[in-house]
Length: 287
Ligand code: 13P
Image 1 (cartoon, rainbow, N blue to C red):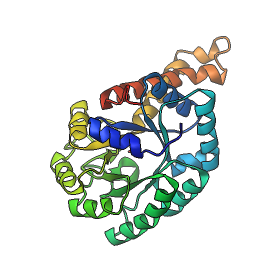
Image 2 (cartoon, rainbow, N blue to C red):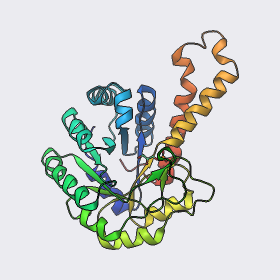
Image 3 (cartoon, helix red, strand yellow):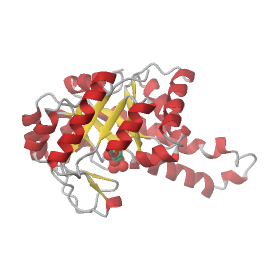
């Protein structure tokens, strides 16, 4: 079932667990995540960045692939198809294409502009039953040339955006995308607590899930995080397994060149990684 993320996140917040958002890149990725969610009876969010959307031949192709897979694989757990870090234009395009969940990332705008643009999407999403994620306090990452401590959001700005009627809120608490630098100071639980105190029931989203130690993940969930995004760790798992297959010369044996064989170890590695994260986040059996 392709559904909005609203119910699954409210349930996660109340049940003190988190739903994983796993970013997809292609058919193998999507199939691995959907099958794992079904096997573990877990709700799941498929994240699509604008770059990945373009790579997969556009948003309507993605919607077609995901809907087709849900149908053909007999997936019955709740699945949200979610735009990750969308621009305003990208958000509108995904709404039109049939996504069930949208992130509008206005964190790089001055707060007034972030509020104005987020407000413009709240109504549309509400009417269509699409969940909407907003962001306050930019989340850095190596790809942006940002290293060191991620930004910490201003709790008053978080409240102002949460009050607009969004479904969930991503707020910087020292987290960054990609690999954490060796001198990373860890998540700022002080900031998380201050934000939670201001936004009340709003489910909070933790980006940059790759490489955050398990104890910090658990503490973040206990303080109100209900959605955790993981991307890079699945990429590493896929890369490592594929590299091993080639380095062991398996592509040179028999029909080992067949893409269905060549991509199988990476596919299995993504499944194992998603399982590990769902168990850590506590979403197993919560579908
Ligand atoms: P990582 O790649 O660090 O896991 O971050 C994923 C993410 O936050 C996507 O929005």
